[in-house]
Length: 143
Image 1 (spheres, helix red, strand yellow):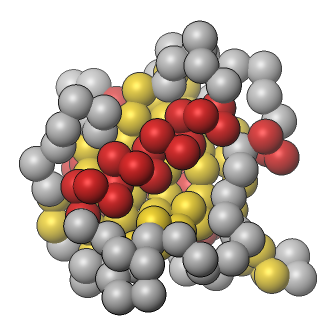
Image 2 (cartoon, rainbow, N blue to C red; image 1 turned 90 degrees about the vertical axis):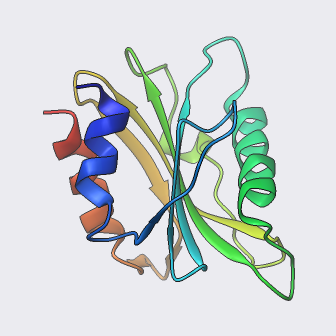
């Protein structure tokens, strides 16, 4: 079983109630209450991470029919890779405002060996939305 299947088994249907059919960019797209999404994408070491995050946002917008002001989606974007690239948490850009159809609330890089780097939205160093449990479930999916 591969890492994407492990992630799906870990989150669906217990945490995310829907598993959407995916397009070429998304390896997995899970949805909860039509408001929260978890997307899994293959990391491309030849592309800047900010470009990949923006591409993930566009793919999720298309996949979920998200619209700003009317049907926003909060998203965790998970990039799977063979080994972690040389990046820092601050390079994993998350949204600081809700002025997007797809609001990127968390970005994760997870290697097949279980190495994990992530950045989540925080307010006064307090995280919300079960971010710690999502992070630990992702790590456990690779074991």
